Amino acid sequence: MRRKMLILSSVITVVAFLSLSFVEEPKFKNLKVLDKNISKEDLEITMKQFKTALGVKCNFCHAQSKTQPDKLDFASDENKHKNIARGMMKMTMRINKKYFREHKNAITCYSCHNGNKEPKDPPVETLEE
Image (cartoon, rainbow, N blue to C red; front, top):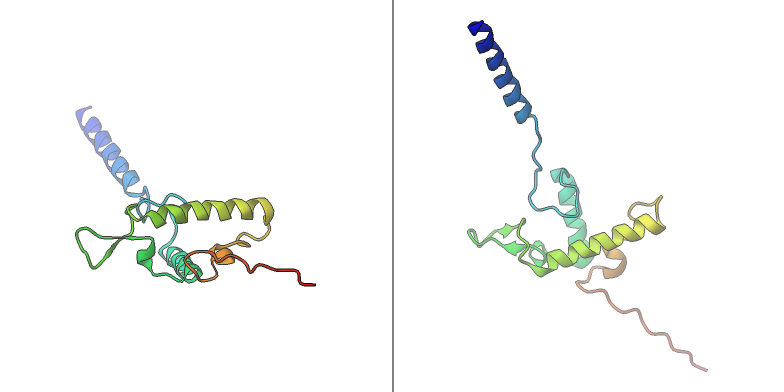
């Protein structure tokens, strides 16, 4: 009986350990709008699209690392532009979902920013007689 209990507890321990090892941790920290399980490739593509749409570099939204000043702390929320970008992402997602269901990304950052940090006002038309 004692031997059976020992074998059973060993099997339970092994099964519990194996099940924990198969739980997939999110690859990136502090993703609040993007899919937490986004692939590295898709995240890099998305970030490059932001850079192009706003004509900026990564440090426009990402804070400098406190421990390694020559690197960026991508998980940090210290840079105010990161939360602004999150709000803009939510806005474009809502617009696309409501008005462009069949075209997932009809409206993007580039739609308004056109490669500029701030969207430009459209030219003012005047009526001349």
